[in-house]
Each structure stands twice: as C-alpha cells, then as structure tokens.
Length: 187
Image (cartoon, rainbow, N blue to C red; front, side, top):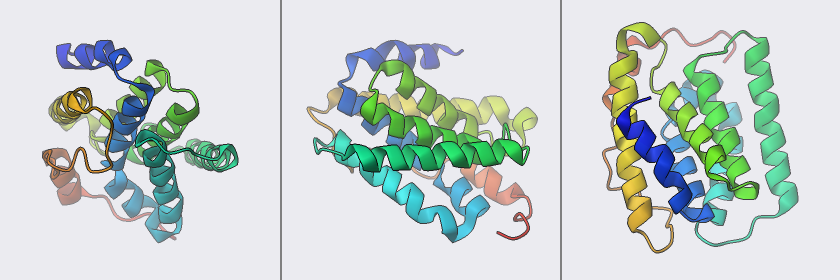
C-alpha cells in the first residue's frame, strides 16, 4: 500500500457516514465507462438507480430500505454472474464491486465498507492490462481519490456536484479506450 492509500484509509473514519458514502459513490461513478462498454445500455438504469440512492443518502435524504436492499441484491447477483463467467479481476467486476460496496455504505456506514468500495474503484483503473500499467494507473486514481477525500473533508455537508471540479479525464481511461478490447459478444 502506498503512503497516499494509507492516508486515505486512516482519514476515512474522520468523515461523517454521509461524506464517506459521497466519496464511495464519487469514486465508483468514475468506473462507468467500463460498465457502459461491458454491459451496454441494459444495466445503465440499475447503475443510475444505485448512484441516485447513494447520493440521496449522502446529501441528507432518506432512502427506503426496500429500494436499498433491491439495489444491493441486484449488484450482488451481477457480481456473482461475472465471477461465474470467469470475469474475476477485470475492471468490469471491480466496477460492479465498487457500486456494491457504495450501496452497502448507506446502511452500513463504517469506514471499512467505503475503503473496500474505493479500493475496487482503484482496481478498475488498471483496465485490462494490469501488468504494464498497473502502478501508473493505480497511482493516478489514488491521487484523484486523495483530492476527492480533501474535498469531502472540507465540505460541511456533501453535495452531488462536490467532485465536479476535480480532473475528470484520467490517463488510465484514455489508455483503456485506446487499447479497448473487442466488445463482448451479445452485448
């Protein structure tokens, strides 16, 4: 683990539960290009619903337990399907897991849940070529997450647009798009 990752993990408990959820979903949303490419439009509404649930909670609203449970169950089943298809360790699974733990942070707002969510977001940044670009892409995403953490620390209360001023076109995404593998059959 890098010094920056350690700082993030050590600082997460200082955030309010709602600020932690905002950080988790803010990081997870950065993985959406992988989701859109892998799943196509059919899973888009589920990811949007998950984002909406997390942000509703993060900005101070209430979230109905059945909605949260349904969203969590959907992402848990989606993760199982990816494991069954031998998609373990791919950015697509990491994106799903980042969302799964972001959703979980609404009802179980411990720092460890958010740490796990942002760890999966960081893992997704490695793209398909984990060996050649792993260190550089992980470091870039960790740096963005550290900036996002600083924003969360400075905010009195989270807002949905709180991370919009941060850099948004990461090199890891540009690299993945340039090397993007063929779209899976039937997607």
